[in-house]
Length: 231
Image (cartoon, rainbow, N blue to C red):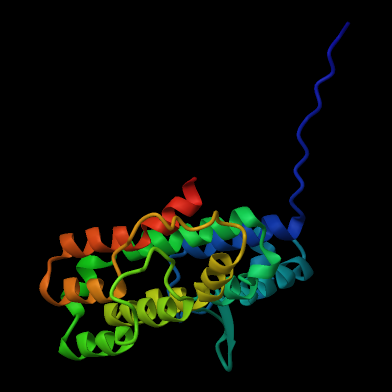
């Protein structure tokens, strides 16, 4: 019996392919932010497609912020707002549990990795602000998870201290996801048998410790979150 082999079907539309080719073309011409891109007719000729297809592909590039229209210049290369499109999709109520868990993991990885940046940027006012935030918190965790309002205020301040605007925007964009996951049933129940490093202790480490000690403290502080994800 002769076996029949089916060829794979390219499910990309013509506009999909032209969009990709346009990006390649702009890269090949080494165009930078502010440079004018070729006219629609020139692009249509270069790529061998109609102006209608070019127009649709350019519209897509506008929607993701790669190009913009300027008076007297036409379409120009722009620096895209990398979070603009993503933020519209990060509604925790429309994401599946697997995606929510992975986004929560991103938060844990970011906060474990920010120690060196914090120690380079932190000043006396930052320490005073952190002490004010944790003033009404318990000395230890009392075997429980931290109050979510304290979590948002404290960790939000840490992101602010880094001075990295992109990191701050990313954190603000993810906050609703963190809060939603922490309060949901997606993660396992917290381990109430152990105590974890508190926000107060983290402030002390940031004030008098080292990046290595702070990383150890943050790892202990977040250990319960990791356990809830990995178990």
